[in-house]
Length: 362
Image 1 (cartoon, rainbow, N blue to C red):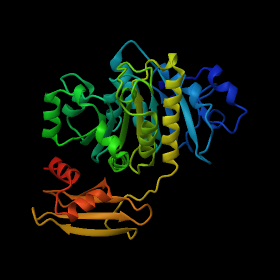
Image 2 (cartoon, rainbow, N blue to C red):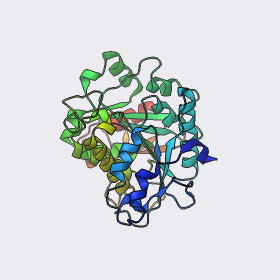
Image 3 (cartoon, rainbow, N blue to C red):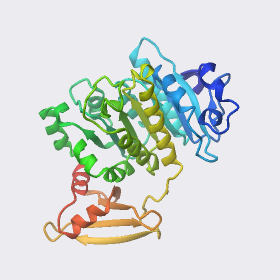
């Protein structure tokens, strides 16, 4: 039973909002005196650590602007002294909820749970893509990301890293990223064109946000305490892009260990999740298929390489995708892109995202 994975939320956190239908705390189904019925639930919140309670105190007070969406807060995952047991509990609980068609948001927890998040998708036969917003990348032996990379059998197709800072990434890690054709979008690149993060997130299934990616002046609780990083507004915008992604079915917010002692940081995380949910209720549900009449199709052949690049443009949202043919099998994939990628092809250049995706299939 799912309720065995969770501890109920302390009544002092949710009780003040029970009579308010204008706030999130008054609209949520809460694991308080009894475990919520999940039949109509579309989004489930999970506490990955005690810091989730500080988040709740801010999140519950925000305005409910999500119509008839049914959202539940299932409480904090049961914690034990055995870290492997904690990882198993998170992956099992998330996996079961995702199988039920429920979108899962985990608030709090350590870096070790990055692997647990990925393990929740082990039963899926289709390729999985991860987007991680993080200042640094650690692919050394024994790290959670390394565990994901060496997992066998694996259904990992891609990891996109967003808002990274080069001085937190070793040369060895950079070389490995290039070798595996993973995409690394540095902070300056994100700041110069933050709208370009939307197509990156549109192709993802898992979203992971390390609060250390936000600069210290906007998130004072972070362990890294870097003077450089995302602004609060940029963090919220990226979270909305994540929510509106057609394929994304879970998000994990970590690096929150100090938010209990910093009210503004707790408020920032609450607002980030608010924008995520706002994106979720605004989804277009327009992922392309070969037989859909809802797309304009553009075929362009590169004179320089001979590759044909096929673009799909949604009539619903005006968003763009590129078709990636499998080099050895009779099937194709679609990845999110932007009009800039189309302009690149029109200039007879190969889009980097298309080439990397194609190489990962080789």
